[in-house]
Image (cartoon, rainbow over all chains, first blue to last red):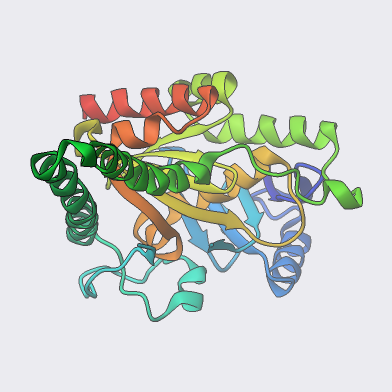
Length: 73
Length: 233
């Protein structure tokens, strides 16, 4: 089961779950798009310690994290 | 001396997977290894340029008259104090942050902090998790060096642990748990290290020992761990 979570003041909130076989994918896609519209950015952490900035929901990712923008200052 | 991490444009870097935040600092050239080295050299020249006049004054005045020894001592004090001020500002990027929103009752709850810390612990590796538990900071090896991530800034330990660059950078928006703020920086760093350094504001570059003595004990412990990793690399 893959998870879409949002980093927020509660620690984090699970927005959606989906399976690669299709269960929950449509809801996850809609939630993903809605969060991006609200100004969140999406990152898919990789198993090797890397991460990828994503603009569409990667269905094969185990975890997708929505974060606020960062800024210097 | 304050500047964003500046560099010559690097056309070889792909924009695939680049941080979206780069659009907000479009005038800044992408940071690369050569740019970081230029930053180090510029800060070294700046520091030497500040210290030499004071040291000349401190050394020369007693030759003119022993009575001027007091001014010589003052010049020595300035030669020590001015670089210390810069290093202290650099170390401040990982100082314990103000409890954002606490005065208005907006600070995240304690259970939110625990929840955020659990997620951050899942994101980092075994070695970094031990440092996180001990100090509250995250260490991350990168292409440019070893990063020490705090909730509102990052230290980049380079040159085999001899030099450090201090970056001011933070998550925007609502007040977040401390660990969540670090998670924001960690994810952005992992997604695009060059972009992360470009977006961040450089507040100091210099010798490790200058910054180390300005850190609080927990940050100093994490900093020592970062230095050890950088020395092994």
